[in-house]
Amino acid sequence: MTYDSTRRGFLRKAGALGMGLAMSGLAAPYVARAAATEIRIVSNPGLENATLNALMDELGYFKTYDVNARIIQVPGPTGPFDAIARGAADVCMVSGYNLVLTRIEQGAPVKIVGAGMKKCALTIFAKPGGATTLADLRGKTIAVGPKLGLLHTLMLQLMKEKGIDASTIDFVDHGRNDLCFEAVAHGSADACCASISHLNDDAGPKVIGEGNLWQALPDCVFQTAYASDAALGAKHEGLVSVMAAYGALYDYLMSPASHDAFFEARKRAQKHFDDASAKAIWDFNQTQRPYSRDLSMTESDIGYLQDMDIGVGSLKRKLAFNAVADMSAARAAAKLIR
Image (cartoon, rainbow, N blue to C red; front, side, top):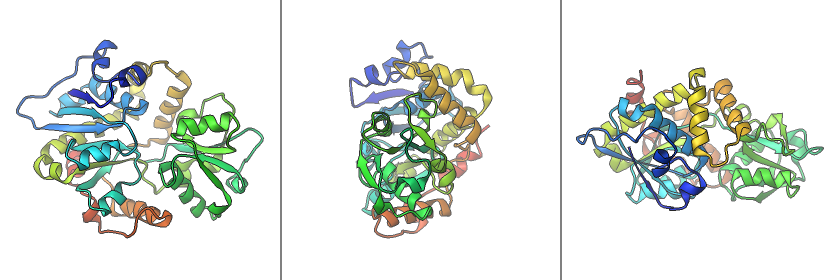
């Protein structure tokens, strides 16, 4: 397994990738037999992806499934999709980018090939003494990311399903979800939609139980995996192997046996290790089992995402399942996992 990065400073900021893996003491990256087709896997250089990449390398699932992988890190919410659309990468296995269907509708030569984390690992936090129910959010300032970005879209969907008029809420762009959480902690917003990694945070914001999105939006697939049409055609066998490796990793990640490996990988991936955050992620993986060894998505899964995007205005029309998705590699991979 080899690594590329578009940002030299990433290793200093997020750690545990590329050269950082060797420096941190992980096993040397494995490169599969030369005859195997190289699969270029692109991801954002964030902490959760860094942890997964470190675990994948340390546990050797690419070797187990005979994968010759190149991990490419591209920052920004649109970065991985852009890289695949322009032919610089083959597949993104974990992405919270919520405009995939929009970009496909616009003509991008890409298909959704499966799911990463299936359950939404987000919840609603409110400042102490503030809102205690979703209805209390009316008239309040809610920190989310960019307009019609992932956090904003999911909040709009949540309000719709709970019968709350979203126009009564002031949604403000505070950037990524950790900054949204900080906005509430510092008093510049009344509530936010943010990662469950903050569940053990002692900064002050309190959870609105009705806003646990994995419970409130049970039909919403949180992270999709997507690949180029070219890779689906010319590198299908390699994609099957890649998806089998990730399915095996996810299955292991949700088992108690992964505890020590998970915490060690996260320590190497985070410059200043946050034990409370790591425990929140670990507990969520064990109790909610948000992943699946079978990465395939159903027509109903895709239909829900399309309806949600149409409802908020980011998608113009609903396309046929086969026009936006191809689950052939995911289904084949599920049969290989051992």
